[in-house]
Structures are given as C-alpha cells and as structure tokens.
Image (cartoon, rainbow, N blue to C red; front, top):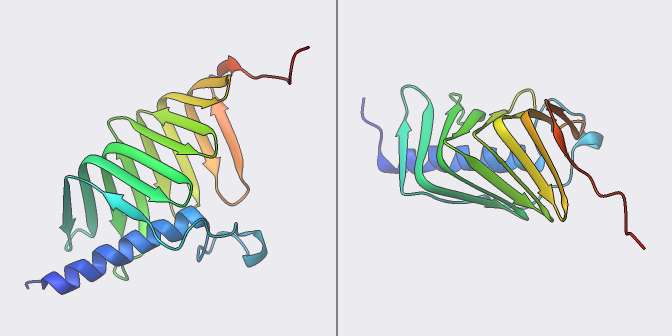
Length: 166
C-alpha cells in the first residue's frame, strides 16, 4: 500500500506538533491541567539535512545538522530518532551522537538524550554538562521529570556560585 506525499506531510506535521506539545507540557496525560506549564511556543521549528519517515514502523528520523527551536529552547544534535503511534502522537525520541540544548542562560550537553512522552521524562546519558554563568555541573547521567520539574544527577561534580563576592 503506497502512502501519498500529502499523507506523509500530514503525519510529519502531526509528529512535530506532538514534540511541541511535549516540550510545552500541553496535552499530556501525566499531569493534571493545573500542573501543566504554560506553552513555550505555538510551533516547533526544525531543520535537518534529511528526514526519513517509515510509516510501517511508525518511526521518524532526522539526520545531519539537526536544529530545533521551541520558543526560547534551542536543541541541536546530529541525529534524532522518534517513535509515534497510529494517531501520529509522539511516544519517544532519542537524540544521539552528542546533543546540546540552550534556554534562558542555561546550556547542557550529553552524548544522548532520551525523551519518554508518556512518562514526561527526559534522560541525559554520558558526559552530561550543564552550565549557567560561572556555575557548572558534570555528571554521568541526569533525569528531568517534566511534570514535577525535578532534576536528578548521578555521579555529579561541579561548581555552584553562592552569590556575589565583595
């Protein structure tokens, strides 16, 4: 069975909108409405050298100079593999081969970033680095719970500024 280009574009658009919903906290069942953060932006902007959509396997792969922007959040990595369901709702995504994120004065890098949409959890693995101003943290792994906005780091070391010095 062949899928038309229009159908493929609609599925790609639906998957990208699902990514935007996850990043903004909108429309996810894991948190009650009052606990959802305000949307970061109305759209997710993406750029990559290639996009491959496998309708039968329900996967989407972006490769080469992958850039994504959602409001103030900027992501970049060489490759993103995403899984979605039959309704084109994003279920998970994995940024590999080194990923970086920037938002409101923070920057973070890791070898890989896994996003579990249903659990509203982000896992950073391998040489995790977080920097803000003169403060920095390094860890082997980090977990971000999007519902509670809690961050846990494992095997961590770093420097945290305590305030201005006189």
